[in-house]
Image 1 (cartoon, rainbow, N blue to C red):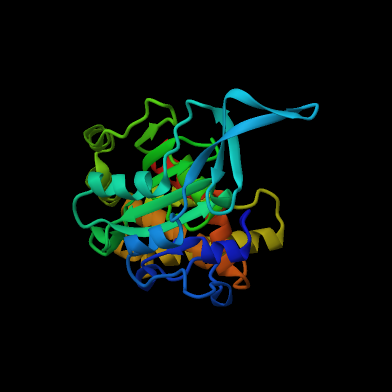
Image 2 (image 1 turned 135 degrees about the vertical axis):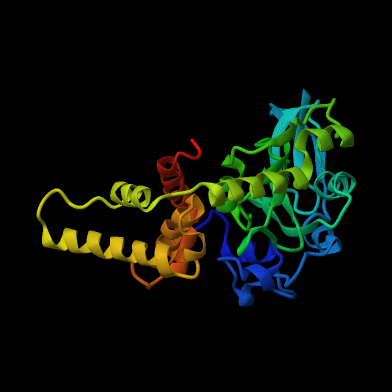
Length: 331
């Protein structure tokens, strides 16, 4: 489901808060070597440094061979990994390396000055890309019975693919696919280029991001907007017809499938304890369709893997957005 190997996922990616969230999709205990990469609570900062960021990116001179003589290429440097010698790329000599331990951990400790904890951290592309995901240690109840968990994603690269970025996200990053999904989110962010003039100004970062409290406020506001948006039975029926239209051609099998899906959705909306508490609101409508997609669509075989695939590939987000559009909320 990703571009890295199973062993890489289980040694070069750390996953926290498993008591609240469970294991990542790639969890394989037999591949985790001397110590597990999953943590029941927050990941200790020391473990992130020790297990992931104990090496540095180094600048090396670049040479070319002319006849039997090696000549240095002016104004060019290669960025290499100090422990393995892997070459991440060749850049102009003005390229600034943003060391992972400093830019993704130390600087965040200066920006974030309250009870924020590390939820996940990892390396991708042989260490060419790295991230740290910070989150609140406890879920936040946006409305009664509905909990959220905000994240602040800090990421940078040594291979020139991305600038150092601090970004508010809703995706919990545990692999390359979820990383890419989080980076596609259109949320507030701050990017700092790898130039010789780059330097993280803590107050600038704090002001630009509004940090996690602002993000949390925005998420809570969105959930409350959904909960406060009233939806009549007639409007729910209209949305149901748009999402699950009855077949125009008289085909028994297609009609039966549509009727079954509609019956399940109506049952969820009106009676299911995961949904019915918010019946009559946009939140209830969205929950009904989201719950159906996660627990009833398709067969039970490989359901967990299929749900994860849908989340990674954006199918879940697209389905939710369609419902929101019909409700008149969102783009």
